Amino acid sequence: MTSASPQPQCSTDATAMEAAPKDRASANLLGQILAGLAPVTAALKALREITIRHARFYDVFSTLANEVQSAPHGHIVFVIGPTGAGKTTLAKAFAVQLLAHFRATGLFEGQIAVVYMDLKLEQSKEFIWRRFYIAVLRLLGEPLLDKKVDFQTELARLRNVAAPAKPFSVLDQEIGTLRDCLERQLDSRGVRYVLIDEGNLLAMTKLNAKELKSQMEVIKSLAASTPKTRFVFFATSDALPLLHLSPQLSRRVIVIRFDPYASSKEDLQAFGDAILPYLEAVPGRFDFDLRTKIRTIQQTVSGLYGVATEWIQRAAVDPIRENRAMSWADMEKAMPDPHTIRALKRDVDDFKRFFNPPAEISNHENGGEDSGKKNHPATRRGRVGSRKAKRDPRTSNLPA
Image (cartoon, rainbow, N blue to C red; front, side, top):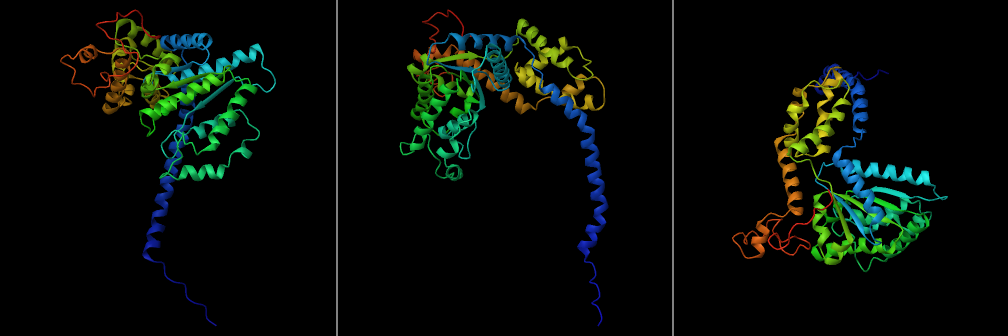
């Protein structure tokens, strides 16, 4: 019995065999690159974990510490700043120091004095209170949570993008149960602070103005029903429209501004003092004159400290890998692209405009020549608390 002769290799197999050495060479090249980046990755990780207590950071930190202690019961604190100002760094540092304070003063058994969390949008691109309650209860270690919530149903609801679960549906009985459970847990666990980053996501919904107001009323009622717990939100400028939807909200929301560094001589000096320690923390340091470059850095990042440190991190990759000092050429190579620079400037301008309305607001309200600019975000009517420049003298600024 003769065995069948082997079938000849087809052309595609032959091509694959010829390409295999090249693939192995490519894989070896990738491995070499990744191996060379290992020390760079470790150095960048250490650099990202550095927290510099610069002027803006210290001012906002101090104001926040004072406000959370002295604010009346039922008030909510919002730390608001443009994207990249350093709010997340501030939030994490504040959480760490609060926890250290409570540990030093003594915690009772089972107490969770400080809760820190990020808000998240769901698949439906809506903020869903049910998921918020579940997330906080998980952080608090609610022992019966799995028995109270059908997580398979939860996942099915979230995957049904065409019919997302609305946050205020009267038919959703589970929300009330979770809310009651959360209030009891905040009290029994002795929670003193709930710090919530990305608070601007409260505004990232498909809700209309009336529903957005209801959204904030939920927060207000939650703060009122848990008198021993202070809620602090860290948010970008996107959250600003939420804060003055009604006189009741305006009265109970405490806004702490996280301003970027401006282009004045004093602010440039302070910005340089903030950037210098971070540059000195780069392995190999840097070899350019910061005094002659600080204005360029400020204008590029619109005075946003967090964006400046991210820029330095990108610029430090080649110097760390090549074991040399970082040059201004490295900074120019890693500079944000023009579209990013313009977007940052728009965000900062909108932030400043909200707190310092331009003169055309008074013209609009008095029927002046600028009264047709109805769609400009700074000239919309109905925002509670806006100062009428021609009528009310400026007596003080909001906390910086």
